View (cartoon, helix red, strand yellow):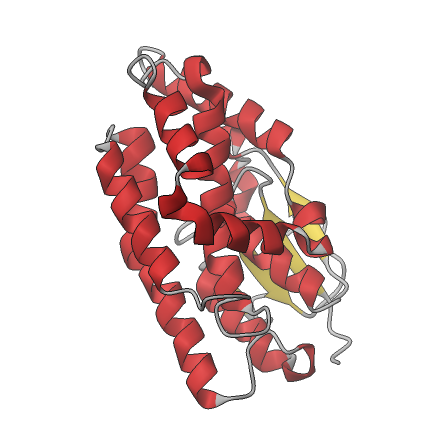
Length: 244
């Protein structure tokens, strides 16, 4: 494997950052993380690191160890967008097997990731920011579930296709578990949706899939539900405060 340094700008509450962290852990790659709070994003990140979008994750490949507030050399490879970073890692470290060797299974994994981005992600955002109907969520979870094989992971062995979905779904469940802590939900709405996802036979396959994903050490290391819930409550409180 390459001995070039990997630096990841990240936020623990971000599902997109967790996508990359999962892949780095699965690949057993050494990496440095520069973390900050999305609700209090430092000005130096946009000014010195990622001026075009200032979003996480952001990966720098090579160069010396970076400290918060330092500018990475413009000569170094640098990437934003979590799914693009995942593909970069899979191509740069083929021995890590972040994608299957079989071309058809690789294509299947990419189609799954596209479905997550084009179908699940908009519903995930719509549920919490626009109060989308619960049936919209049920339908898209059922769609994603239908793309899974009867057993195992998306493309047989674990791959970056699995990390495309898991962080978003974990946060869906975690935010629903907050229930009354987020006032934008109608009374009983979150509890009903959570119970349906966790108990209905309709979603038995997705529950088994998530259980198998969470059994992997990479998931345990990169997922902190207590922190994510605390950040979510703070975020929604700020959004509900006049002037924000």
